[in-house]
Image (cartoon, rainbow, N blue to C red):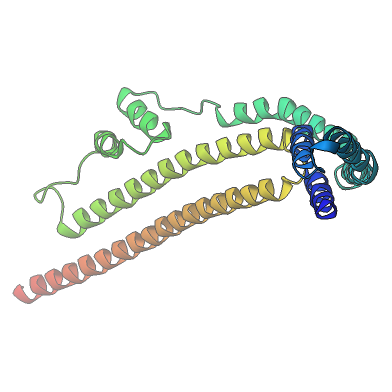
Length: 271
């Protein structure tokens, strides 16, 4: 029984991770040693012997095991700090990131915040302001200000149906592209905010977190490329609309020429 007790007690002491757990196991082991000690006649000597045995185990095998565990932990920490994640290089990288952010961020933000407004008339100034405000919740205002600056579609008495159709389509595509531009401007602001957050995080990143920052940067890059593709698609639509407009003008001219030829023939026949 005593042998089993000491084996179990030793195993629990090796598994103990904190000083509080070791003290609790010593007290529990002493109590159990008293309970399994010899009869009352030898109670005094049995208790002393049990306590001494527990202390011998603590100072012997358990102490050696704990020293070995601490040695292994120290070796692992040294490996991490000198080979895997050298603290000196990590601090140097943090310092470089901080210097780059403080040197270039304000300059880059200044480029994006340059005032490029050029309109001089009140009506066109309102349109330019709503085009450049980088918001997507005022498309109705954009349509109204666009109509005020460029005028409405001519009435049926002022222009032919083909001319009215071309005018309406040109206005529609222009507004579509302006709305797309406002959307990309707003998304661009969000991308810049994400870039600032990534810069700040890289300046405070813990060892081993680089893959997560890289993944976030890749996602932001893909989103930026998607915005670029959207702008290219809008440009292609505008170019297609320009070609369609030119073709419509050619068709309209051919129709007008044909009608003029018919009228000339009718006049000649009458003579």
